[in-house]
Length: 437
Image 1: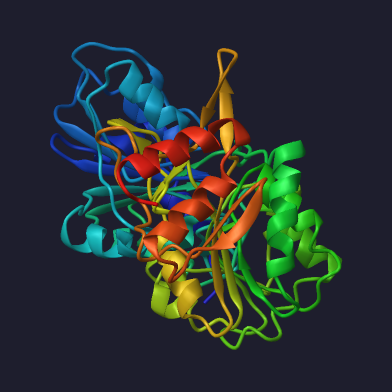
Image 2 (image 1 turned 180 degrees about the horizontal axis):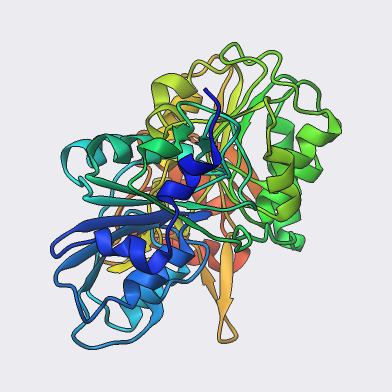
C-alpha cells in the first residue's frame, strides 16, 4: 500500500507540539550513539518549568543535548544511562541528577522489557519509502523495537540525512507513530583516530592471529584503524560485531570482506550500532550487505560462536597480573560501560577456530609522569570487566600472549613481560612478596 502525502502531513507537527505528549513522571528514551533526536530533546528541555519527575534514558550520545549539558536548578530531568559517553559524564560532572545501570549489551533488550520500561520513545529515523516505512537508521535497530513493545507514545524525528539501513525488524511505518517531526541535522560522527607508534606496534602483534576467512569484531579508535590498514592482504573476511566502524567499511569497499565463509548469516556484515564518518553512513544507505541487529542478537555469545574463526578484539583501561580487565571504570570513577566485552570474549572462544584478544598500551603519561596500565592490584572499588577465568590473549606493544590455562604463576610472569620495562622489577617484587611467583 503506497503512502499518500496526507499520511505524513496528518502526523507532522513541530517539536514543541510533539513533546507535549510527555507528562509528569514519564520515562523518556531520547537516543543511543548516532541515533539521537536533537529537535525533540531540545524542545523537551524548554518544558523544564512545566514538568515534574522526568527520567531521561540514553547511552553514549554522540551529540550534546541541553538535557544533559545545561546547568539548571530545580529542573525535572534525571539522567539514566546504559553507557556513559562524554556528554553523560558532563551531566554527572555539573551535578545533574543522574544514574548509571551496568549490564552486558546482550541484556539490554531484556532490561527494557522487564525493568527499564519507557513511557515515551523519541526515534531518529530515515525518510519514509513509498509505503510509509522508515528505517531506524545506522544504530536504531539495536534497541528501538523493544522500546516500541512497551512505550505508550512514539514520536518520530525524520531526517533526510539518516541512511535507510536494513536489518532485524529495522522498519517502522509512520502510521504507527503518535507524532512526527522533521530534522535536517547531520548525523553525528565519531572520528576513528590516527594510530600512533605504540598502537602500530600493538596491531603488529595482533594481525598475525587473524587468518583468511576470519570473522572480525573491532571497536572505535586508533587501534581499529591500525589493524584495519594491515588486513588489506587478507581474503574473505567476515563481520559480526557489536560496532560497525570506518576501518571495517574500508575493508568492505576494498573487497577484503566478503562474508562468504562465516558459517552464519553468510553474505551479511552484522552489527548492533555504528559510529563513523559521513562516507561510512553513505555507504550504509540501502546497502543490502549490511544488517543492523538487536543487541540481544549481535551480542549474544550463542550467536557470536556460530561464526567460524571469530576474532574478537577489545581494549581495557587496565589489566592486573591475573589478566583480569578493568574496561569501564577505575576505582569508584565510572568512565564508560562494559558494553559487549565479555559477550564477545566468550562468544569468540566458543567459536570454531576463534580467538579473544584484549589489547592496550602498557602505560600512559600524565603530567609528565609514566604510569603502568598493568597493575599489581586494581585501585579499591574497581569492577572487573573480564574475569581471569575468561581471559585469553592479551596484547601490548611488548608482545601478545595466550593466558588461557596457564598456571597463576606463569600467568603473572606473562603479564609482567607485557608491562613497560620501567615497571617490571616493581611488579616482580610485589608478586614475589605475596608468593604469586
